[in-house]
Image (cartoon, rainbow over all chains, first blue to last red):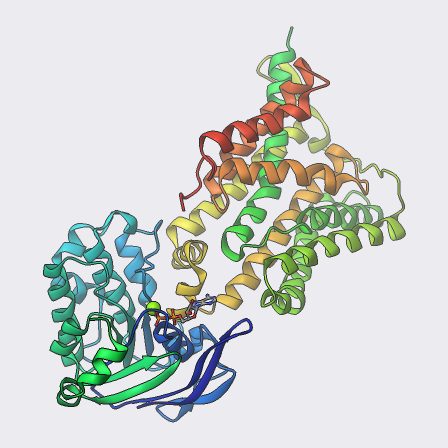
Length: 236
Length: 287
Ligand SMILES: Nc1ncnc2c1ncn2[C@@H]1O[C@H](COP(=O)(O)OP(=O)(O)O)[C@@H](O)[C@H]1O
Ligand SMILES: [Mg+2]
């Protein structure tokens, strides 16, 4: 459903992505691994249109995404959960959720769509704090909130950047469980992770990046077998 | 012996005017990170347009008060769409330079078309009269300015805190990129906010005409005070703009009464003190 072909992205003059290609099939949970600074976040930003690739193509359900603004890409059904949480500090938890609902949505949401009620049912902790400022939540709660905020727009695919970073091990499990739940509801997921041990529990397939390029693609068994690759390109 | 109430009311009227100018400036800065040097130039345009309208259609102050903001709204929308948006990708310094250049161009055009001398706008009728208030005789017009500011401030607060648009605007002040990725047409929001800010400064210009007279230096004069308001109040905070406008209005007014030579220094002193105690301004978000 998502085909990234040979994209090149820059920050100013520095050339960050050197021809990245990857594919997502409907319903998959794919994980993008790699050391710090290799261009994982930039890859997600390029798909989302936050960074504009200078070359290459990104097709999502037969639409070209390159050249579109982030809001247009979001309206086509791509959800983005950036690193560092990025909740709206001065909005309440409830208002943060409302921000996820897309006003310009073209297709109406069918059965099983995400609503505020459903979010509160699933995450009573968010309902308890619905009138608190977003900035008053704990790290784990903030992460939950950013994910469900994006879900409120009922995306078909979610790009999620290091969802477990900086969270206590118990909370990491909560967040991963949540992603599994989301995926079961039919949403395709592309997740960036540094935490290889966490990723291997939930992902179907893996890509590994190094210096702005994809250096490995394969499923869990292939990654476990490729000891050299893991040693060279992942944190120990 | 009734100097104090007079200067207090003068302070309120000036606070009202300052708020009308600063509200748009702080919203634009909060959202787009652009300190708009052309903001006060648009305020001046409002005053000059109003002068011309009132010369043509004698004394049509109310007409002016509706038409000038509309013209400035369009000018603001065009500036955002065709100039600011194109320069945006080159960075903040370039945006700043653009607004600086625009302010300069507008000022020169104003001098060329209307001349380099003050123009008096006289307001007649009830607005131009005086009334008895807290034991003194006071011009209705200055009270009218304060009421206008309360009206505009209330409408803005209702929009910001009671509507979906308001949630979007506050979200965009926090993090416009995130807002964009959630499916909000942020470029359109920017254009709307910039145009609204321009309209508001045009409105303030119409109101300032009869109070301060209309001259090419009027932009510079209010720009410094408006900058101080948004620094003291906190960038992007409407509530901060209200409080800071009231503070600076009184400071300017009583400053003139008590320390005539130092009244400008007092304003900067206040700014320095606030920046030392709370660098993000009274109502600003800590980063
Ligand atoms: N906004 C930016 N401006 C300039 N360089 C950046 C910016 N963001 C990231 N970079 C650089 O781009 C490279 C890739 O960054 P990133 O995609 O964030 O890596 P990762 O997510 O894999 O850790 C790094 O060298 C980083 O320093
Ligand atoms: Mg990253």
